[in-house]
Length: 326
Ligand SMILES: Cc1cc2nc3c(=O)[nH]c(=O)nc-3n(C[C@H](O)[C@H](O)[C@H](O)COP(=O)(O)OP(=O)(O)OC[C@H]3O[C@@H](n4cnc5c(N)ncnc54)[C@H](O)[C@@H]3O)c2cc1C
Image (cartoon, rainbow, N blue to C red; front, side, top):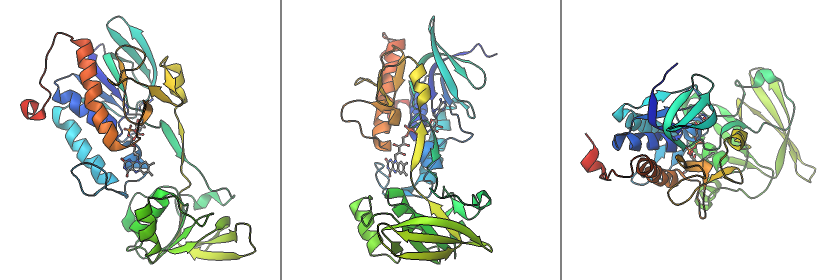
C-alpha cells in the first residue's frame, strides 16, 4: 500500500479536473489526478467528442475530442500522478489531511479538489423494446467517430442541442440525415436551430418512435405522429438516440459535504464546508453558477490557490504562468 501523501488530489478527470491538475503542477504542487473511467475526458470526451465547441476562450472552434487531447497534453507537462479506472468512494479526514477510499488502493492527501461533474452517467434509452442485438450496431447512444457514418442513411432521435449538433455534423458526411422529435420546436441554441432549418436534414416532427426492427443489415424505424393519425417508416443504416443522460452523483451524499441540490455548495474560494476540500466544475454550486467549461477553467486556479493558501498560509507565490512555466 502506498504511504505517499500528495499535497493535492483532484477527483475527476473531466476537462475541469484536468485543468486543475495542470494548474496545481504549475504552482509546483505534488498532485494526483484520479478518474473512475479508463480514459480522461469527462462529458466532453465521452458524450460529445464530435461536437464543435465555440465557447472556449481563445479557440474559435474545437471538437470535444481535440479539446480533451489538448488538455491531456497540457496536464502531463508537470508530470502529475494520474490514476485512471479508479473511483473515489469515500473521504475521511485524518491528521494532516484526508484518506480517500477508492475502488483500488487508498489515497493519502493533504487537500482535495472535487471535480466529479455530473458523476457517472448513462444515456436515457429508447422508450420502445427492440432486439438488444441492434445495440452498438444499428442503434447507437454515442457518436465516437463521425467518419464511420460516411455514406450512410442516419436517423437521429431527440430535440436538444446535442441532437441538433449531431445532425449538423453528419449532414456533410452521411448520405441522408433524419431528425425525429416529439415537438415542433427544437430546444437548441437559436443559431443552431436556424442552421438546421436551412440544412438538408429531414425533420420529422411531431413524431415519436413506435418500433425499431431489423431489416437485413439496416433497420426500420416506425414513426407515429404525436396526437395525430400519421405514421411513417424510415429505413436507415443507423439510429442515433439522443434523449439526454441520467447522471449518478449519489456518492456525494456520503462525503459529509454541505450540498446545494445535487451539487456541492462552495464559497468564492471554491471551498466546501470541510476545510481542505474544494469543489469545481459542474459539481460545484454557488449563486450565479454556469455549468460551462469556461467557468470551470476559471474555478480551477481559484481552488488550487485556495488549497495552497490553506496548506501554506505563510507562502507567497507568483500567480502568472510566465513566471512559473519551465
Ligand atoms: C451534450 C453536451 C454538450 C455540451 N456542450 C458544451 C459546450 O459547448 N460548451 C461548454 O462549455 N460546455 C458544454 N457542456 C457542458 C460541459 O461538458 C461541462 O460543463 C463540463 O464537462 C464539466 O466538466 P467537469 O470536469 O466539471 O465534469 P465532467 O466533464 O462531468 O467530468 C467529471 C469526471 O469525473 C469522473 N468522476 C465522477 N465521479 C468520480 C469518482 N467518484 N471518482 C473518480 N472519478 C469520478 C467522471 O468519470 C468524469 O470523467 C456540454 C455538456 C453536454 C452533456
